[in-house]
Amino acid sequence: MKKDLEIMRRKKIAIQAAKQAGKMLCDNFGKVLKVKSKGDRNLVSNVDLKAENIIVGLIQKHFPQDDILSEENQFRRLNSDFMWIIDPLDGTHNYIRGIQVFGISIGLVLKGKVVLGVIYMPVLKELYVARKGKGAYLNNRRIRVSRKKLRETVMIYDSSIRINKKPMLASLGALADEVFNVRMFGSTVRSLSYVAEGKAEVEIEYNDNVWDFAAGLLLVEEAGGKATDFEGRPWNINSKTYVASNGIIHKDVLKMIKK
Image (cartoon, rainbow, N blue to C red; front, side, top):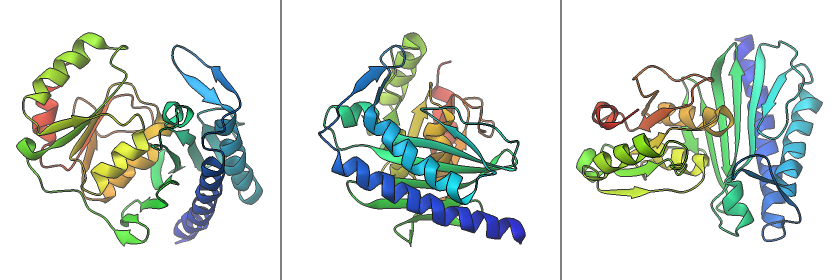
């Protein structure tokens, strides 16, 4: 009971932080002042850092004892039972180029397990919330994955094909023959939220990071879907590859993935 109350307290702050950061991102859309590279074709802007400061500032104000892992900075680790996993701007490259497909991801981990996920898509004012064992919601409305089969599937595929070109292109070719169509959004939170609410049936990722998927994979599972690594094992915060689906097509998709 005490842990439930602690999670609910953090849920309130997660929602508040996501909405505040989202407003700032919308206010600054089209006004990016500074962009720098943090690796091969990996960019960060001044607004990524500004959004992070908003989110982290609220968390540290209310829960100074909690650990925080964020995409843009490493924060001190206090060995708390609770850890926040944050992507302050998922879809940075879209944002920089003026494409309105981006969002905020805030996941909460309790003793190594993700127990809360909040995703906010500020342009459309879509707030997705999932609690472990409590269901998935969009703007307080319960959402569920679709019941479509493989031939009807909208598949969302990892866009980082250059990193693992041979197996990724082989998988894409095999799957493209079996599904209805393929999409790439350049934003994990957009992709996983669409799977969770039944607008797509599967997302496949070869090269993702925990701040990208922590909230989204919980959202898919709580919407009745399935998420595993490429071997069919349960995902965790150390995963890099995953399939997130409506569950119905999961085994078929796993069989066609080349590693």
